[in-house]
Length: 328
Ligand code: GDP
Ligand code: CA
Image (cartoon, rainbow, N blue to C red; front, side, top):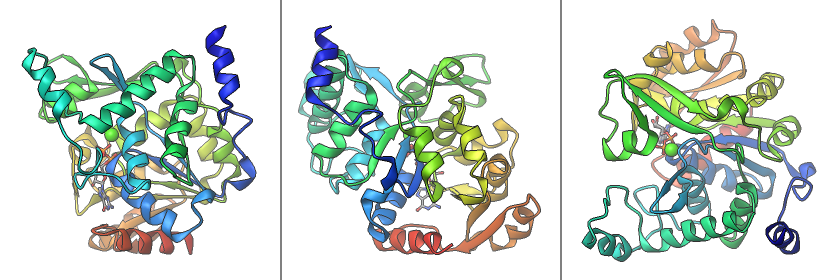
């Protein structure tokens, strides 16, 4: 009782607090690739017209703290405080982690001091009874971010990796501790079947003039979002207004295991393979110049194609890419 009254008193933007009339562009987002693009998008348009639906399949509890890596990467990047690595806070220190190490605690998941402050706040507010939507909104407004950032679901949906050796791995164990070195036999989203989209998610999809699927890992970052019942169907109804940017360029990912995971879900490890996974929900595919020769293969799936420079070395590159997409 006390918990719910606190949530009311602090009056966070809940389902009814999210003003849907301002939504013009809705973007699905994983971590680093998405965040880079979104920084450009918010430079190319009014940031208060952008709503980000973030992946929470990577969420986990570490040292008792609720970590939402992809939501934080997007928030820190849009706030202009992200570290050069693409995650964490610029100039942060590792005192807490070093101290934990002295007690023999495993420290393979790098959590720096200020970043830990975010996770402590999130864990504390969740324990007070706030939803992840409310906590995420508190973080983004406190960091001065104009774009809306909403988790895909407030229910726990957890990505699990099934290895060829028959093991089931927690996502961060696979991704960070073992540096995605396992041969993967399958990917599962635990809890997805009984999850529901977070408040504002379906509204953001329905009311957007354009829906953008960021250049994120299709299996590990976009996959969990689409696994929440109702989200894939809602996006499919908007197919003509959906644009996806391929994270695969010339058959490789710029970072991470996206290319090796595509065959696990039956797709070719190319930009055309990504297009195939999105063909029911996406009308336009953005391919890198390096993949110009794949345009016909993607058009044969019934999709339009934009070929352009999609590698974002700088925020200016990201803004240019966003402008070209908005011009569609
Ligand atoms: P996470 O940061 O580990 O959560 O991973 P993401 O879901 O963001 O996926 C990383 C993907 O982003 C990889 O497949 C990269 O190839 C892709 N990516 C990263 N930077 C860029 C870029 O500048 N352009 C494009 N097209 N893709 C990118
Ligand atoms: Ca991620």
